[in-house]
Amino acid sequence: MPDLANLDGVGIGTGWDATNRLAVASEASLFSHAGAGHQLKVNKAGAGDTASLLFQSNWTGYAEMGLAGDTAFSLKVSDDGAGWFEALRADAGAQTLTVPFQVAGAAVQQGAGDTTPGRLMRADYGYGPGNLLGTVGQTGGVPTGAAIERGSGAGGDYVRFADGTQICTHVLSVPATDTARGAMFVSANDAVWTFPAAFAAAPCVAGMPAGALATAAFLTAPAIAPGDPATGFRCRACATASEATARSYAVQAVGRWF
Image 1 (spheres, rainbow, N blue to C red):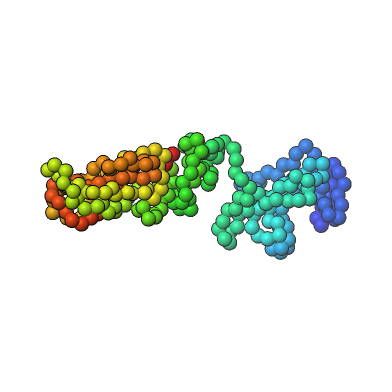
Image 2: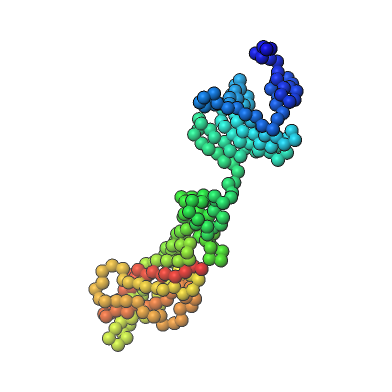
């Protein structure tokens, strides 16, 4: 029996060459155990070299996995055998798994309204610290922006929610209740509140005096038409006794922004 140690090369069903010193042409190759486990080792000389498995079609490479140029495991793909793209990278030193490609398929959300249990959430369909607060938006009733928007202006503060709810708050100065109307006293002029953010339609507005009261007082209808009720509110105060100075009222408007 010939000595099979330190052969220059072996060709099974095909010829070997100086690069491919072990060449096999067959339907399959089998590496089995000798009673326990089995390992197939691909070793390289240094970190900058390559130890990988290259998958070809008609001698053109389309996929490669292993240690390509460093010691991090990577999976690369190509559509022509020349340009290669890293599809996955596992770096033990950094303890990171990088997936440069966009993940698709049945395991991923299929749309903004897909809440199927167990599916991966797409960043553009979900909410987190980066987009929970910001500018809200919608298209056809489907949120396209942040979940909560907060702002302020000369007319007070507002909060908008992705479902369309909007709340505006303000401390409104209402003219003094120094004009007698029967047994009550009312403001001689209207107080005008321009909302810090417009509503889609007239909101529900409520208000109450801010601070301690010497007399009972409440807000009542204005003397003139309110204008656009979606952008502002007009009112007067009514009290059980005459007051010579203006009074502050905490007002709140609740409605929808779309």
